[in-house]
Length: 110
Image (cartoon, rainbow, N blue to C red):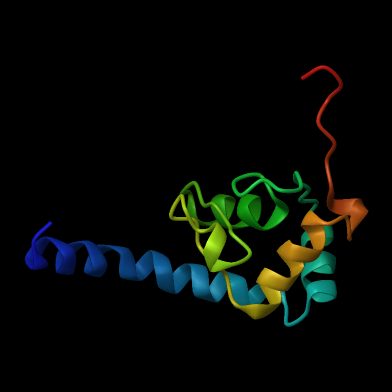
């Protein structure tokens, strides 16, 4: 991809990136605050699932774009977003079992 094409792609993505930044900030400033926000919205999701964790579901619904969420850069192999500190900490905690009220369990035999 040449530089002009990259520049156009970056310019086109900028509004979405800015919206995602605002949405992540609106979630709260701590993992507990984020959990309370998501619970208040009735959003639940699956652990260890970039596209089906509660944060990804919230961001996808709010933007109309399928969003994957990684909790750290090393996991960012599918071009998932790596959210700011408190959101990443929430995702890490959720993935290891914290906030059970937000977790969905895969159906038996699925």
